[in-house]
Length: 115
Length: 108
Image (cartoon, rainbow over all chains, first blue to last red; front, side):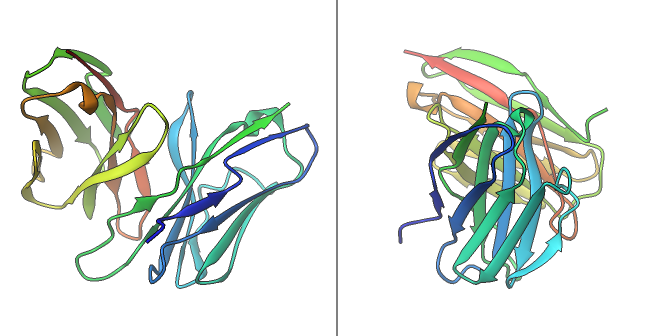
């Protein structure tokens, strides 16, 4: 299994531009999580999906952020318009939610720099 | 006050030493996760536990629900164990609170 796949691995953009981060979860996993990691705030959960449905988006910082999961094998996190304070590493993780599971498998992350 | 507190923030050990990283939380949890983040940035889930103790190789994780405390132990530490270790408290419904991490350096 290829694990969780994220693209791009690195993104540099200018303030005001739209940024789209992509994630392919592990096949068969039914939960998907988007995290953001910064030096100041550490790791934060932004949103998670269960069976393609957003369950909790309370961690999404503001309306400029949106996430979608159109099918079980693909999710996007979009920032529009981007700001320098959005610079961070964004991780996607997936898990199989069952009676005893929930171990999460993390993707390699997307390092976003907004100039 | 953070919902999850880790200690120490930084730890340097000699190869072979026994290492303990502590995590205290103030919220009711459904599970506690220990994550390892390598210098290259990748994150690996080490343990998920809701009671007792789990062991995987040289790593041992324990949790005391009454005291709201968990520890991660590394026996016979090795330079390849150098990483940031993050404690994460998972509430019912998959809401997470993360510790700020413990940066471990094991010197040969």
